[in-house]
Amino acid sequence: EKGSYDHYMLKEINEQPMALRQTLHGRIDGSDVVLEDFPPGSFEDVSNVQFVACGTSYHAGMYGERLLSDWGINADTFIASEYAAYPAPVDENTLVIGVTQSGETADTLEALQRARDRGARTLALTNVIGSTAARTCDDALFIRAGPEIGVAATKTFSSQVATLVLLGERLVRDVTGEPTEGHEQRLRALEALPENVESVIETTDAEAVSRRCLGDNGHFFIGRGSAFSVALEGALKFKEITYEHAEGFAAGELKHGPLALVTSETPVFAIGTGQHLNRLESNVREIQTRGGPVVAVGPRTASQLAQTADEFLPVPATHPDLVAALANVQLQLIAYHAANEMGRSIDKPRNLAKSVTVE
Ligand code: F6R
Image (cartoon, rainbow, N blue to C red; front, side, top):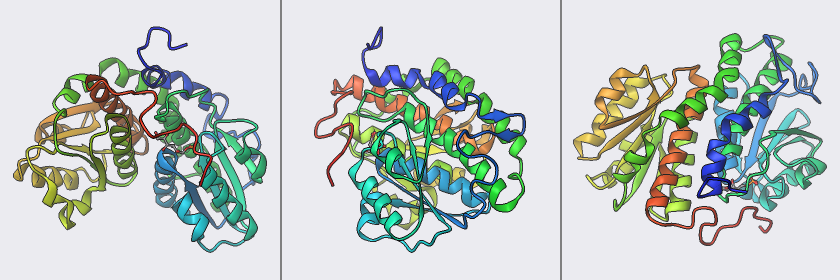
């Protein structure tokens, strides 16, 4: 089933363009979003959105939250296991979105149950038709990424983000009566996402760059906004399959503590979306002053960032809302190649299961 690939993870990374085409298929019609079960007006009563999720799906939820907030919708993201014990206030105008690839994650199901019990409307954003989340929520929206075998979630993150952009466009129109600002360019960029991911996969230098990260003390990932969620995701992927220490931070938080950890043996991956790049560049210089090597990941057009960093992994220049999703593919490949070089059990990392059905 792996075909010519050594691991499911690499196969699934490479399947992303195809998975994204399935995710988007028939859902964009010119300047409109067409979401099968959600005709215009489906979300007109929504006043705020809460994402509940675990792990990689939590990072996708956070990505969605950053975009929704930017588009004027009240949105928050919660770790499902926390929410299950310490739920946030909701009312009947709260839409609680459980982001869950499998639709079977016990913590996420419990968080959704809590939200439902307290009168919120619940929506499962999932890959699995007929899953518990899909069956028990008021609504379900499918990411259509196809089966994912590798324990490390890859293509499902990309498809979750793409689906969240579509859902976000629908929500904003329903809630405000207007499309999002710049929706035309964003939808065109979403249509171009599969080929842009393809171009990252075809041209990446991640394997060579990953070799420089072996034997280091720690690996840090920083970004702002959607790139912060991808920094957390890049670190999770790296730690779960290499077993090396990795951590993600909001770029602005570095100087509030983590900078103390930076030495010549802690490579830092700095992810830029194309917005607020001068701030990221000054973070890069702060790291370099402490001797930390910096690998920047950002749009090809970010020439200043590319020049400042020690290494640069470019992604196609696209709408700033989608750059971090492309940068994430570079980070998936960094984690994969580092783990492969170290001879790790990539598809079944120690101590981890694909679907965590216990609390
Ligand atoms: C990491 C990973 C996990 C899952 C998490 C949630 O690569 O796969 O962190 O994302 O267990 O799983 P789902 O999305 O099935 O609820």
